[in-house]
Length: 345
Ligand SMILES: NC(=O)c1ccc[n+]([C@@H]2O[C@H](COP(=O)([O-])OP(=O)(O)OC[C@H]3O[C@@H](n4cnc5c(N)ncnc54)[C@H](OP(=O)(O)O)[C@@H]3O)[C@@H](O)[C@H]2O)c1
Image (tube, rainbow, N blue to C red; front, side, top):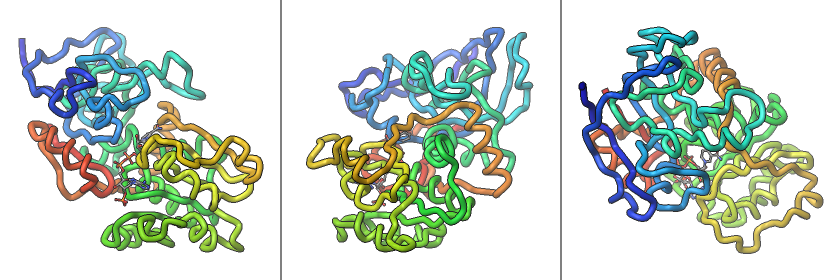
């Protein structure tokens, strides 16, 4: 039986020591399944917090980690209709979320959480859990689309589509925020970005950010952001990745009828003086929890990536599969800019 290398997370109480590099048999293909030779994967903050026991969605152990992968189809089951040998594919985060609103069963199909993920040489997936890769992107770039990119796309297009000239606030320089910046600029929107680093501020400007605020030196950055918007009316969309640590400032700059997409909690989970539900009334805004997105939305996003020739922002340091634990440490130390990729084969 052919074998391959893979990573497995043993539990949620061993931190990164619970990540084990091991031999495993190459998985067999069921009738509705596709065997993919994985070329690349990318990490998300979520992958880091699963072995740290901080992830709030379902997980099962041991599990092959990683939701974001890209590769080539090497074998298809007898009932597969969407893919053929040689197709280039990318993985869908919630394998059961095909279109429309997410439901309870779909939240239990997270790749690298409940279903074995992509940090391995070969993966077998139901054909529903794959999409055709973007034609203009390299395998590494395609491996960044499943989670951060789709979440940003959902925040900007999943509820009320972004229009040219509107203002988008993005926080920090992680994967979600960099995709939001690029999608917003491609749509002709104005982008206000925050970062803790003056060096990263320069990179943000090169990527097209119209305004950059250092959230460490300007702790009242919400008011600063509002002043930068036309007529001081505020931002139309806020990509909220800081959580309780940043929501208060976001409320200071959200426009009437604006949408705050609550996506992450990089600033911690302790609610200290955070806004209450009633603040949505005084700010006349919508606050919306976003959980990645459907296969239909991912296809829309890939079409836009191809049409606008958008290339994901990938950190210059790329790790090998064998070095995955080092990649986890590098990302946990927030040394990365944009997405952190792992080259597989
Ligand atoms: N709901 C969903 O479906 C979904 C999907 C994807 C991600 N997420 C969540 O979204 C968040 C971002 O994910 P990611 O993959 O983009 O993370 P990431 O790549 O690890 O982002 C890290 C960056 O965020 C910035 N940051 C850290 N603390 C911050 C704070 N207090 N305020 C503002 N920015 C801060 C830093 O930017 P600077 O170095 O520039 O300061 C840091 O480099 C995570 O909490 C993740 O779990 C949720």
